[in-house]
Structures are given as structure tokens and as C-alpha cells.
Image (cartoon, rainbow, N blue to C red; front, side, top):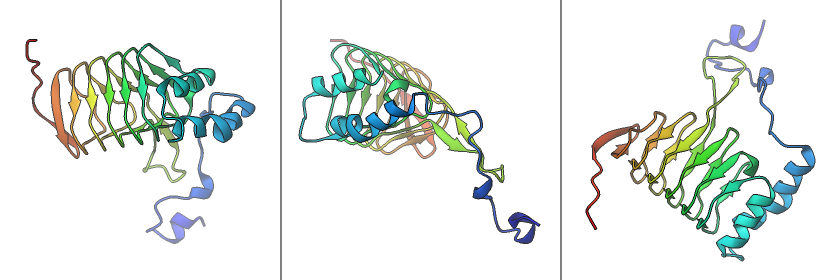
Amino acid sequence: MNDIESNPLTAVCLDQYVTGDYTPGAPLWKQLAWFFVGDFLVQTRCLPASSFKLRVLRLFGAKIGRGVRIKPGVQVKFPWRLVIGDHCWIGENAWIDNVAPVTISDHVCISQGVYLCTGNHDWSDPAFQLRLGAITLESGCWVAAKAVVGPGVSVGPGAILTLGSVTAQSLQPMTVYAGNPAQPIKTRKLRDI
């Protein structure tokens, strides 16, 4: 008799946890080098210059465009699964938890404390199987401070996810979303310059 049969209140058997066909996507030496050296150099507040952090990320396989700014405290799980376009900003303490690919298009702003989460678990499975979903942030979108973007989400061109909002669903272009779960509140209109 397993734990679930003996105790109906037990939701999962973590001793049966499976990752399916998931792999970290890089050889062990690269994972260890990132964990012990690269990650520290990107997160450190002692070296605030973006150019150095970008070189480190590229060295570990990230594809990064021109004019990208990365603030101190930014955490990237696996740089080899990260693509960043031109002229993007990534704010302090943003966490790109990319066990699946994250693609950030041109002119995207990711504010302070944003969490991009590409992995979740199947809560209906007693083995709590890992479920992955790539995240895409389209050109000109803004993910505001302390917002959370879940697995498999695409944030449309020019869309805004406001302060502290949470989305597990894709966001339409040029639309402002707020809340948990995030709901559309208005169309984004840009002023003429």
C-alpha cells in the first residue's frame, strides 16, 4: 500500500518524482562553471557595468543583441537557454528561471524583481512530474516590477504587465494587464512625439 492509499490527504509522493525527458541542456563542466563562477559574476553588485555581465552571459552561451542593460542582482538559471534582442533593460533582482528557453525581443523592459518562471509541476500527478514552457517577451513590451510570468506565456508586442501582476496566460499586443490573475484593463496608446 502506497502513501496515497494509506492517507488520502497526501497529495503527492515526492519519492516517485520524475523529470521526464528534461535535461539542463549543457555538459556538467559548463553547469558547474556557471554555478560557481558565471552566476556570481552576473549577480554581483561589485561590478555594476552591463558590458562585463553581457560578456559573461555570452561566454556561457546566451545570445544577446546590442545596447542591452543588465542591473546588479539579476539571476539567470541557464544562460545557454537565453536570447535577448537589442536595446533591452533588465532591472535589479530580476530572476530568469529558464529551465526552458526564454526569448526577449528588441526594446523590452523587465523591471526590478520580475520573475520569469519556465517550469512548473503537474499537481494532478502523484509523481509531481515537471512541466516546462518557453517564455517569449515580444518587442516593446514591459513587465513591471515584481510581476510574475509563468511557463508557456507569450507577452505580445507592446503589452504591459503592471506592478506585482501575475500571468499564466499569454498577453495580447498593446494591452495593459493588472492583477492576479492578470486581466486586461485597457489598450496601450502611445503619444505622438
